[in-house]
Length: 282
Ligand SMILES: C[S@@+](CC[C@H](N)C(=O)[O-])C[C@H]1O[C@@H](n2cnc3c(N)ncnc32)[C@H](O)[C@@H]1O
Image (cartoon, rainbow, N blue to C red; front, side, top):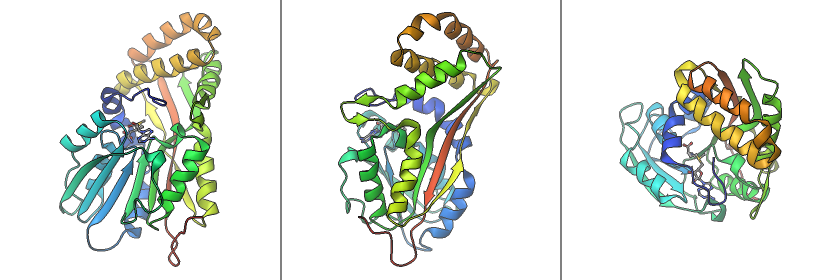
């Protein structure tokens, strides 16, 4: 995970890409397909798009020609978005991609005016309340569908359970909501706030669960996730460093050996434009 200058690595994004693809709510894509223009080039802006995983997942299941604009503040990640582009559209139409070095917190209503679709994935929980409200206004501006996937909601289940799991989970959630120089991060509160902000603009969000379900086949991701989860908890509550030492070593070994089943709950949101008039910013 990343915020405040701490970067997300390519390796982490590559490791999670298959689990993300399996977790995303496929039925929202059916709703989305019906809401897109029937003909013509679809211009899709992917905000905080990193290495472009959203396009690699979504472009091949949508019909019609598409041009993806991947926005991120990390130039290294953006290079991958261009060198590893999505495949052709569902009907074989061409899909192109460009990268834009963007601080999405500085986008203005109107910047994405020509968008046919706006997407973001694993992003909302990294924002502050002010940044999210600004982002919702920017997304609502063009009156196009908005697909916001894989936002954490603060529920994690590790099986078999350990008495220490709950304490680590609580400290991790507090870490997600920590105060930074940009303000307090939303963490698990982001989904509810996004729904509220879109609602304020007269737009309704369809909400679906999109959990990661990690077992023996995803042991590498499970181990990496556990190390980051427990590490963030210890950063938040320093007394946990000593108190969880044996727990962390034991659980990491279990995760690495594929002996844990881990469910990390997320939510996907699809916001569809009203027919007429389209969503208008505040
Ligand atoms: C957890 S990663 C998800 C990347 C990608 N959406 C995916 O699902 O693979 C979050 C991404 O948001 C980007 N990001 C966070 N804050 C940003 C900002 N203010 N402006 C642009 N990009 C930002 C990070 O650089 C990172 O690539």
